Image (cartoon, rainbow, N blue to C red; front, side):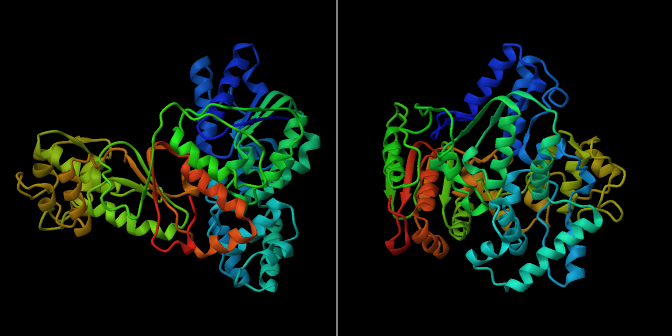
Amino acid sequence: MFRIFGPPGTGKTTTLLNMVDKALESGVQPQEIAFLAFTKKAATEAKERAAERFGLDAKNDLVYFRTLHSLALSMTDISSDQIMQPEHYKELSHAIGVELFGSTHGSDDFMDLAKTNDPLLGLINLARLRKIPLRDQYNESELSYDWNTVNYVDKSLTKYKTMYSLVDFTDMLELFVDQAPTFKNRFKLTFLDEAQDLSPLQWDIAHILDAMSDKMYCAGDDDQAIYRWAGADVDHFINLDGGSEILAQSYRVPSSVHAVAENISNRITRRFPKRYDPKSDCGKVIRIATIDGIDMADGSWLILSQAGYQLSPVATDLKSNGYLFNYRGHRSISEKVADAVNGWEALRKGREVSGKTARNIYSFMSAKERVARGFKKLPALADEDMVNLDTLIADHGLTVDKDMIWHVAMDKLPEQDRAYIIALLRRGEKFNGEPRITVSTIHGSKGGEADNVVLFTDLSPAAEKASRNNPDDLHRVFYVGVTRTRENLFIVEPEDTSRSYEL
C-alpha cells in the first residue's frame, strides 16, 4: 500500500484524480478502478470528473467510485431495504423503554454517520469501529447512563436487528470483512482518500482492498487527523508499511500563515516527519481581540472556533451587520424566504414566476387580507407553471395592490427576517446567492478554504480537559483551522487566556 502525504493545499485529492486520468488513458478499464472516499461529495467529484473527461457513464461505468459504506453495500449480500431506519429505532425504543435516536438517515457519508446525536448508539458504534470491547469504550467515556443500561441497549439492538434481518452502517463494514473471502473482484488500481481518518475496522477493509488490487494508493495527512473521537486511528496510517511520497508544494497557504502552521505541527509528537513549501504570497497574520470592526465586504471568509457555542453570537452579529452567510450547513436566510422576496419583486417588474415561487409568496401573506378564501395554497397551479402578477390577481385570488413592496405585501413575513433582509439590501448583498462567509467549527471546516480565516482560540471545557491526556488532538485541530487560509489569518485572542490555545 503506497502512501501519499498531502499537507494543506498541496492537492492530494487532485493528485489521485490525475492518477485516475492517467490510468484510463493507458487503457485500464473503468470497472478495474476503485476510488474510495469518506464523503459522497468527494466520491461524486471523482466520478463526474472521470466520466466527463473520458465520455463514460458515471453510474454504469464507474461502479466502484464510492464511499466505504456504499462499497460494502454493493459487494455484500445486503439489500438496501435491510438498512435500519429511524422508525426502526423508534420501535425499538418503545419496546425496551429507552429513548434512542437513530442516526441512519439514508446517508452513507462517513461524517454524517459520525455526527450521531444519540449518546448510547454513538458509544456502541464507536466501540465497534475501534474493535474494542464495549465495556472498555464505556469506561473511557463520560456517559451519564449506567453500564447495565448500555449493555441492555446493545444486546436489545443486536436481537432486534437479528429478528428482522436488519443491519446498520457499521454492520455493513463488518459484513464486508466477513464476506471478503468470497469476493471475486480484482482491481488494477485502488485509491483511498483521507486515509488518516480510518478507524481500525475501516483499516481492515483497506487491507482487504489492498490484497484485491494490483496497486493501492492511500492519500492523507496525519497532521490533519482530527476525528479520533469518531474512532479514527492515525497511528495506523503513520506506521503503515510500503512506499510513500510527500506532496511538497502548497497552492493555498501563504508564507506568513505557513509559519504559524509549522509552529503548531512541531508540537505534534505522533507524526510522520514532512515539510512543504508555502505559496509565494506572503499573506498576513493579524492578531485581534474582537471581530468587531472587521470589514468582510470582499472576498471569501471562514469564521472558525473549536468551541461551537461561541458561534451563535457571531451569527447574530453578522445578521445585524447585513452579511449573508452559511451557519450549521444552512444559509442565514432560508431559500423559501429569499425566493418569495425575489419572486414578488420580479412580479412587480412585470416578469413571470413559477407556481412554486408564487406558492412561497402566498405562504407569507394573510388569508382574506392578501389572498381570497380558497386560494392560499394555489390549488390550480403546478410548481412548474409560469404566471405573472396580473394573472395571480385575476385568476388566483391575489387581492394586494400592485405597487406594494415586498415587506408590505408579505405581511406574515417574520419581523426578524424582514429586518435582516433590509440590512442585507442596504449592504448590497444578493441574499439569494452563494454566501461568501461561512461560520463553522474547525471540525466542520475540514476540506474547506477561504481568502480570509477568522480563528477563535478559546477552548471548550471538554477540549481543555481532553487535551491534558491527548495534546496532539488539539494541536491537529488548530493546525486544520490555520491552514484553511489563502490570504489573511485573523487570530482572535481573548482577554482571559487561561482557557485558550496559544498561536
